[in-house]
Image 1 (cartoon, rainbow, N blue to C red):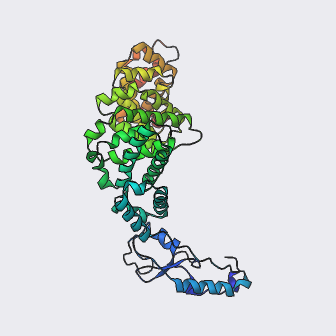
Image 2: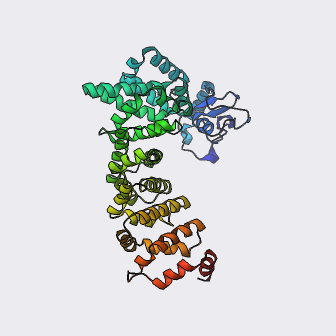
Image 3: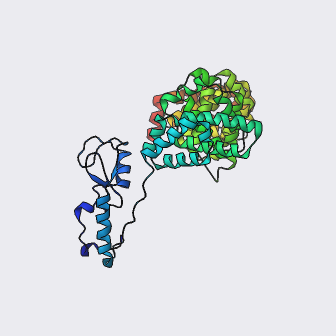
Length: 436
């Protein structure tokens, strides 16, 4: 609104109590107070009480358009047009609760036939984008369950017929399901109720559409996060293959896109599934070790992602093939070493666990040479000299002590300093640190 404030007296009842600006779309809350729609909607996303009266005001409370006040404001704007006041436009009617209820009834009545119509999916998507209240109403109406079953149907039909229309319906359904999510209570049981869902999701994960893979991984994490460990253990090889393939695509396109939420979801699934010996071997055979190392090398060391990558690697290196893969990759020990003392306490613990396992159970000569070349020995000495946890220092000491005789053979190793560090107590090291 273009005007000089000192020349125009704005009626107080035109002002929104939240934004303190003239209301463009005045609505009356159940508390009887009028607010601008945009301001009260944003308020109710965070606070469940009336800003003025403080009485309870749930986010799904009805907001009644105050047409009389809106017309008065518009009339006032016209009267003051010569002073630079711009008339506010008549607001569109937002797609609110009645629209959501109607679409849910439509789904229940026509089922797959309704979801199969492009206009239905588009309407639901617009409603979901419009606000949390609409998404909650969709949850209550079971829209997420209908969408999951429809995705199962689409994947089966696409596999059999390869129709373009089915592919479009699958794309739109996955996007909508990503928007509304799956409520926690339902997420616990959906996979147990329908054994075809995992098969359908594995088909999506091994297709070409990158966004669909991202949506599916977030959905899969949503569904497995609080479900039975038996289901997580039995995630099939195709699903794990799809997740590894997705991470490979992320690495290859890292300079263009970095879907952190999806990468974190993928890593959480891998961390949980790698608890079981069967899955460890499957992941190693699928190239997970190399791909995780590449992912970490390509990243900026984001805390949560790094902790998860190191967590998965620490489990996979419990297997002979896993340790061999870490050593075979030119950047394996190097990136683990780099992350030590640079991210978090959890990352430090996992990095040292990897270094300990690999150095203890791999051929000594090869592993020690690699540790010297990539700076692992130097970093372990740093662990002994800085103020960090006693358990980390003990692990570092153990690694260096186990390979002391082999390390002495390298001219670049300061044997006197190494001997001093290994013979010093924790208190001696701290005292030395304070001197420096």
